[in-house]
Image 1 (cartoon, one colour):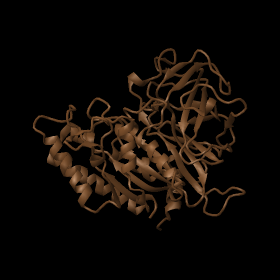
Image 2 (tube, helix red, strand yellow; image 1 turned 120 degrees about the vertical axis):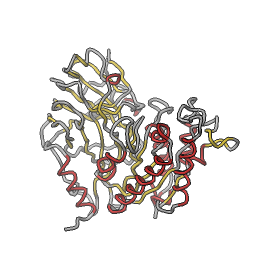
Image 3 (cartoon, helix red, strand yellow; image 1 turned 45 degrees about the horizontal axis):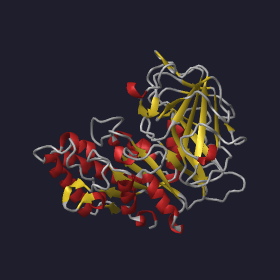
Image 4 (cartoon, one colour; image 1 turned 30 degrees about the horizontal axis):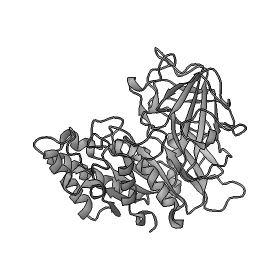
Length: 422
């Protein structure tokens, strides 16, 4: 039996979510219209936390992590609404993840990366009607629906309290948050201000936030590496190219209901090696299993080329892109391919220039194959016209690979909005 796309998402959710509080993707609510559905509005790619990115002492004590600890984090919501659900993730955990309590609130001043919340705004998060949840190893837990109003482009504070902590040094996180989180001993779940906190620029245990949205709303997933994760952007500034793309889409009525979700991580590779699971291995989880996905932008491959820029690598990348297109189209998702940006002057640019030759091969295929539904020519948008192997100096963060906020804005402006309007 062939499932509809929405039923397919519901089936995936039933298979992959932890037992605590999972809500089917087709649940209806009073006061909503037929066709309303869940749409991913914020995501972070879950990874196994490296030793250097673990919570510092005293929050990590041997194999015990975050015992008697409050963890306060900020999410930058894309499409807003008045009903949400939260994803807690333990996919890489070495032990069960016991969350004693959780809350959501409006951050002080509405700002990202602050520890304070607005008085009276905190709301309890429940899982199957319970305030606590134990997330099984290798699994994800989905909260009950949260009735809280969050505007499009606004920030939301999520606070977790762990009484026992996680009994393993293997925990799930997203190191490249470019957003400050706060750790504090004791239960401070709904405290409006926190004093004596430890600041860390990582997200722990959070992998998604869905919004209940009209039928016309949908999510565009950005599959990428550190260039999409935002290395070179401003901490707490929300000026990665995905953020700039969302701002651009919000200015047009036809695209105001498009949520932009970032499924990228620093050092990630498409084929092998790199940090975190490869794009090939995580595609089903990070693209197909997300709620309400209608579009995809693939901008990844520079770490493969920088590590081994050979004709074989170029051919393997093209084969992987074809696989992504086939899978996405089978799920009714339109796909845009983004050309790989220059790395001349970086260590990825080898003396024999074979890595650059492989980049040109891949980019030529993206531009001319007509296999993608649309092309975002990021290479052309940020390269130096006088030396196309290099980034424009005005866009270079300094390492000749990653961009600064001006460069990320140029990438956002190069995305064809026809991808999400036709």
